[in-house]
Image 1 (cartoon, rainbow, N blue to C red):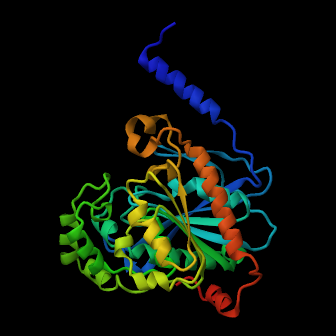
Image 2 (spheres, helix red, strand yellow):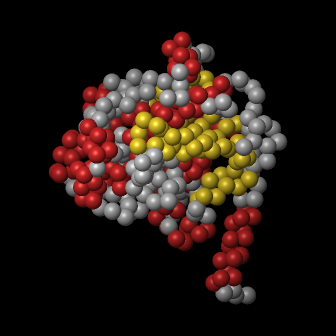
Length: 380
């Protein structure tokens, strides 16, 4: 028996959907909520409004919460129960704030968020303005002013602590950050790494072929376009002037960086000064965040930082699984190296991140007074 191509694709889609028709078996169902936060102290890159910080929040939901399949664009963003009730016990939960990669979105790290949330964490992921596929269009400045992302993370922590639904459920002594690719850089800057833009420019002048000196395929503008905007845009010039500042958030107690980039832009002394637990995970076949020029030198510079190289794993293996449409239309993001199962890697890394954060927070029983005051004064 033979089938036409459209009929064959239809059968394949049905088989694919049937194989994924049940939510995963896990400790707690996972709830999902959205928040449209803004940072009133910074401008939007477009128009005259404040900087948007649209955030997805995952949390452990009560038993019996009905999860459904969440699909975002070409990605399958896991199983969650929209706006479900949160578990009552324990009263306070650790918080992990996540940062997506260049041009990505919060939903692409849903697999990590779900693993942590099912095991008793609050997880929040912000869509970084101008640099996210969750907005109608990319904004060039969002691709070049990377340090603004660390401020996004800190403001989201402020907003969550002040939030009537989530604030009182957060244990402010157990806050961590996680990020992928440029989000890995973001996690590190939140932990205390400082950006040296002049150093990065010198590096790129000597190594123009390095991935850190070029734009991702999804960018519809050139590096020259962005540099010109930086010279002409007043908000951008003000941002560049503060690029070297420390964006350390002392509330952050642990950082988990997946395939971090921009090692060439990080001040070496600031890496040596990082004092919180840091764990770095990257695939040894990553041709975007090449380990030898990113993860490995970063790990070697940070005292007691841990590094895990995953054999055969490439960069986009850390994105959410793709649906059938994605496998046909955006193969670069959806196809993994031979022998690599994206779901299995997500399970492995999710378990590793859970163990890392639990170990990092072990022995911390309550917030100190200064952190408690931070909560009371949050919401700026």
